[in-house]
Image 1 (tube, rainbow, N blue to C red):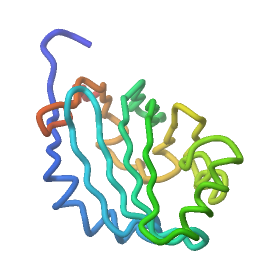
Image 2: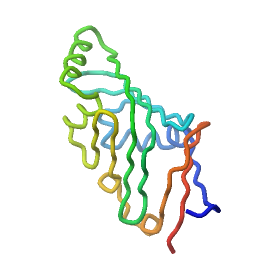
Image 3: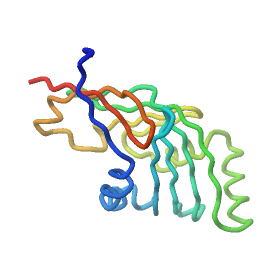
Image 4: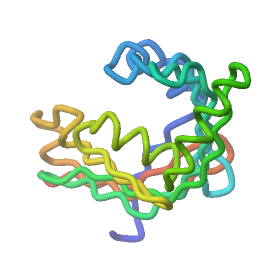
Length: 166
């Protein structure tokens, strides 16, 4: 991209407050009871309060480092490296169930993705990918012209450079 870039800045507040109802009423809302997203030091931090049928209530914390964002006409994909910390909010039995699940190898995210097989989401022990084409409708005029490039995530802001192919 050229040095004179158009920048889109997305605040934590937009995601945590303005989009809350939309996110929690999406299919993900069947599992996500609450969430908080923070942009700091080049990372995206996500805290999820989850309710999983077989495991009960959990708190999952993720530190994401955006490895690649491919957002151009026809392709909309996000790849991130992650670290996770998952803690049960229930008692001893729930802790044991979570420990038994983790003994099978891999991360909680891997286990959840393998169990639910959500469209467009894949995870291994260190990274995950989200094919946004399978989750969102990009069949509109703006999406067919928009190209985004990840720039940074810090000080409560996510920055993306953009171009429009007119």
